[in-house]
Length: 124
Image (tube, rainbow, N blue to C red):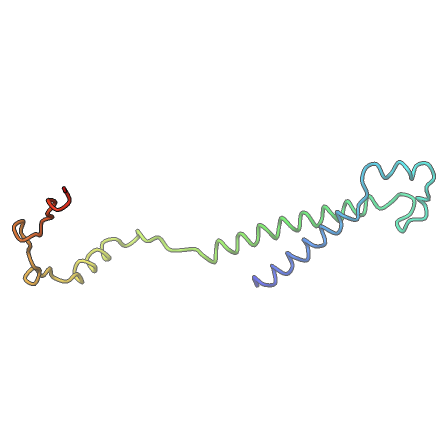
């Protein structure tokens, strides 16, 4: 399902970019008003502004809708349970499984056994 939505998302994004790039700027209508052959266009003398604008808005709405749907899918895919819901059983399980402390095998070093640094050789 996720892969299908991503492919649809890419198709809508490419269509939206193409529709935006096809549209003419605001200054392009000035030449058509002085008889530059506007009636010879594919969309007639009214121009393609209405169709392209509506198609672009439809792609934009679909694009944002798919973005929200992908976000919702990601939220539900990684939903974790609350780790604080069962604290009492976890603490008793970890306390009972802890090994006993063994202090018999640990060597103890006293201050007299510790090596000292002789700094008399450094002062020459």
